[in-house]
Length: 262
Image (tube, rainbow, N blue to C red):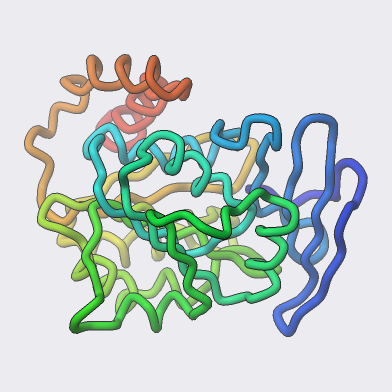
């Protein structure tokens, strides 16, 4: 995700109480933008299950440590890139998606191939911080939680605060992982944001800066410590995942190692 001018031809322009929603086609890719050119996500309509953006591939690096998810929560629907990848990669997995903006849900159905009927996919029109705090019957826990919720100015502030992050941890299964998409602009104060993730997960965290060209930095919180702190022991898993899903997992494994322990 990056802040830049809109590329391609605008095919949809809507507005709700949160701001502008823009869909643009640029060759084989279709992108969703918020506000004045804040690109949220991108898909290839001819191959919606492939991940285009580097940050979305980096978020899926959680699969290095949990590669057989049975239940996944996405907070933030956007342009459905993560949804399509998960539906293709794990057709038997139960996927819940929480999106605060009804217009984004409608745009996703109209322009981003979001299925209207899939027994393994549920879309909830709700605020992420309200959904994650629900308890009781019908509130499942998850193997993976992906927090990818943005507004016109970047990551949704409430979804990077310690109470929300603690609630995410409580909704994880025993060996679950939460991946949070953050930004590292000077005004974002990424060190403070990452410190909140570390506190919420008792220091069982890793981070990835996928590219210096963009602002995304992904923070990963683990419900329990990794079985091994030797990240290089996951190299075979990374190669197998790359062959299965056409994502350069070995590259992200190196990032994990260099950016956390080197």
